[in-house]
Structures are given as C-alpha cells and as structure tokens.
Image (cartoon, rainbow, N blue to C red; front, side, top):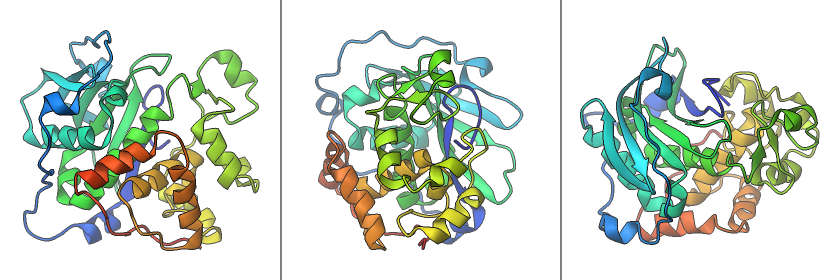
Length: 305
C-alpha cells in the first residue's frame, strides 16, 4: 500500500519517467467511449443508505501532501451530488468510464469519488488511490489525480481497474479488520487487517507468492516500484516492478491487464491472467470493457524476469 493515509489507503504510483514516456505530445485528453444511458447502466442497483458528508478536509483526508478540489457523493452505485468544489468534467468522465467496466452493484461500495492535487512527488507520481470511509471497510473513497490521469488514455483505463480492485478485495467479506485478527492472523496481515482464508488476495498469495517471497514484504512500508525491483528481476510473472512490491499491488496490476485484454509479454504473465479469468465474477469486468470497445490496451508494463 503506497500511501498510509488512514484505513485501507492504497494507491497506484508510476515513475515520472514512465509517465512522460507514455504520454503523447500536444493536448490529447482522455475521452471516454459513448456510454449507455445511466438508467440502462444502473439497473438493479440494491437499496442502500447513502453516505452523507459535508466533504470537509478531515473526511476526505486532506493534508500537506494532498488537496481535494472536487468531490462527489456516490449514491446506490451512481454518481450523486457535488459536495465540494466546482463541477469538473474530467472527473465525471472518469466516473462514466469506471461505470462502464464495473457493475453498478459493486459501485455501491463507493461513497465518495474525488479529484486530488498532490505536492511534488519526485520520481514517482500517484495516479489514484482508494481509502476506507469507515472502520469496517464497508465503504470507500476513490480519488483521481486528474492532471496525470487525462494525459494518457490507456494508463487512465488501467488505473481505474487497478484502483477498483483494491475496493472489492478490501471489503469485510475479504479482510477482517478487528484487533483480534491482527494479533492472530495465520493468512496475511496487510497492516489494516487479516485476509480471510477464502479471500482473493490470500488465494493469490498461495498461488503466486508461495515461494517464500511474501516473508520479505513489509506491509506497513510505503509501497514503491523500487521495493519490487529485485522481485521483478527474479520473476517474469509480475506486470512491472510496482506489481512486485507486494501481493495486493501484484493482483491490482494483473487485474487491470486482464480487464483491458493486455497481451502478456511472458508465459508467467499469462498464468496470472488465466488465474483471474477462472475466478467467479471477474470476467464481467473484462466483458464490459470488451463490449464498450475499450480493448485491447497495449502492454507497456516493464517486463520482469
């Protein structure tokens, strides 16, 4: 987890060099596909109690590093009321694209959808992150760094899938955040709680981190590509060194590649994609991306191994 900013904060970080290399010149902006009407996208959304907030700095997690100029409430899986700042069409476009790939009932796990501005970050840039809005991890805030996000359409798509995977792998059905679980965890404690034995992340660890490399991961350390460089050099299955930093980022990077039909560069990457394809419910994300004409996205992940 790259940014320790409250419960279950997870972020997608890229190096500045990769971001520059991936961006086109000129003023190309992220343009979402033609989308079905909201009433068609959001059918069968379960009833839920809307998250209510005045969207103040404390709620959003503002500090010396991050500011939040724009924020929307998410109500029943749909983008709701603007609760901070002025409308930003770039943020609305990001939401519309997320709503294209993610089922509406799962979008209901979000309570806030926000833009953020970050202080100088050096060689690594935070593209987006999610953070829990309650102690149980039953509702989340997703935050997008719009300047970087709109500069590279392909990276924008991968970022949305990456971050949303941190939501559905961090729900109470996946991880136990009680103090008792943290003290007695026999699966994997990520610093926020203990993953359940049947959780996606623990199954992923057993499948792809069972060689003992999990023992070298400090889940409380700041996640960065530099932390994964050696694992990346040793294992051709990772989608880049950032994926090799810890199992949650490994899952998220591979999931983004799976959703947008990225062509694997190695047989070991293919094994990860095949594992994801076999998990119940995950194929719907890819099917929706394919149906919307968003695939394939080229493989620009740094090759490991």
